[in-house]
Image 1 (cartoon, helix red, strand yellow):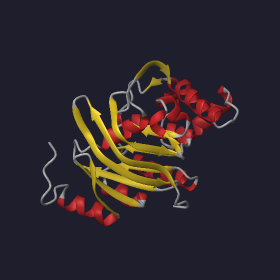
Image 2 (cartoon, helix red, strand yellow):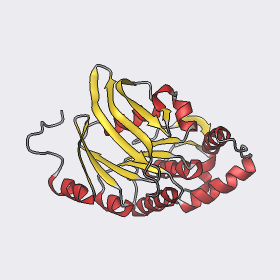
Image 3 (tube, rainbow, N blue to C red):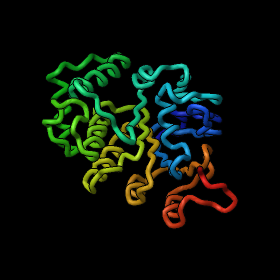
Length: 256
């Protein structure tokens, strides 16, 4: 971690989904290049945090503030957040029928490049980088020409998201159980790519309960989310404690 100035500042964030309050009070500061691991029982609000930060319309912010690189993130729409350098990997990446993978990713990459004042990549230049990234991440090159995630296995969907992450090089990435469905080589690819991007200043919030990957990622902090609040903050010892004893703590009500 090279920079101590917060890239992401979340202050007392409160979020409703339908008639239910899911995030009751979440506050955290994530510096550029930092890596935070978020752990918590099902229903504690982990995925809600990522989807809210990404600007999903189903998640209604009821209070609090979020600043990203000094700007009001909540005032941006989802496309503006992505162009500003926010990336979210989905717990279950969706299919996008009829849209070729390479065209989808190139459009996203060029939107980000243009927002940075950089020249858009033509198909030839983009495909060179995409093929290199696919090979490095263990994704068959043929999948670049297939519709997004169409017929992909769970592990292939996650590797496809890793390829997007590698090509976009975002400022901040929220990875929601990126290890789910991955084999050991896939997990190694996650760790290697995250380390590479952290060196370039990308900050990460990683949702995971996979202790071996968490150890390899060497997080700056481990956070335990309980009933929509950050209930505990620590280092790797907290992840070890959760792996050993579970999420329940004396005096805390169970998550419904």
